[in-house]
Structures are given as structure tokens and as C-alpha cells.
Length: 120
Image (cartoon, rainbow, N blue to C red; front, side, top):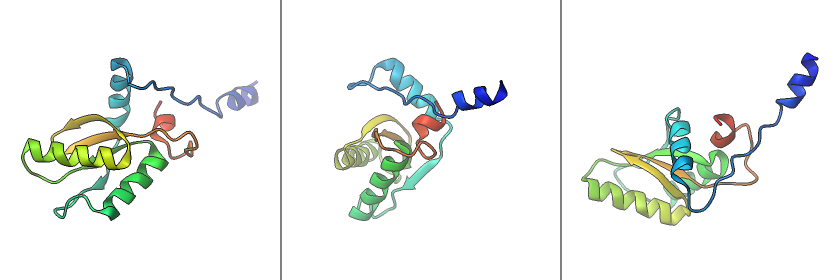
């Protein structure tokens, strides 16, 4: 009987998100993101092509990520976050201080890497 139970828990269902996200979905994603550490830090040089490539790769692999943006005024941080969102075609889930949470679903994401599958 134990073997049957392990076979049933091998694959987890993927999170189904609507566009636009509902408040309940945002709340759930923020809960998952709370467990994450920033995976990309944008330096003083700002948003470069190389940084955008790394954020894009991280979104492809993990789907839900945190990034850390440089210090500055709230308006400057918001502008950097918006530039990243537009360049990566991601969705901004939350922005608190210098940390932003981004989402970009990938139907072919590796379940071992995807934060949506691992923490759901």
C-alpha cells in the first residue's frame, strides 16, 4: 500500500493562474515568495543586457523569483522594477523596499526548479 501512495505523490499539479491575476492568486504567490531569497541583484550600473538575460533565465527556470534592486528613491526603484518587467515580459507580484517579486509562467519548466511547483 505504501508503494501506491508514493506513486500518487510523484507528480504535483501545476498552478493554474489567470491573466490578470486575482487577489487570491497574488496572495498565494506572495506566500510562496516569502520563502525565497533574491536570485538576482541589480548593481549600481543598473539594468544591462547581461542582467536582463540572467533575470530571463531565472524566470524560465524558477517562474517566480525575487530580485534586489539598487538603493535610491522609491520612484527610482519603481522605474527600475518597471523596466525589468517590460524587458522580461514578467508580472510584478510585489515590491517592498529594494526587493521585487516577479512571475513569468513557463509551461515547460523543470518541476525540480520551478518555485510554483516546489512550494505549492
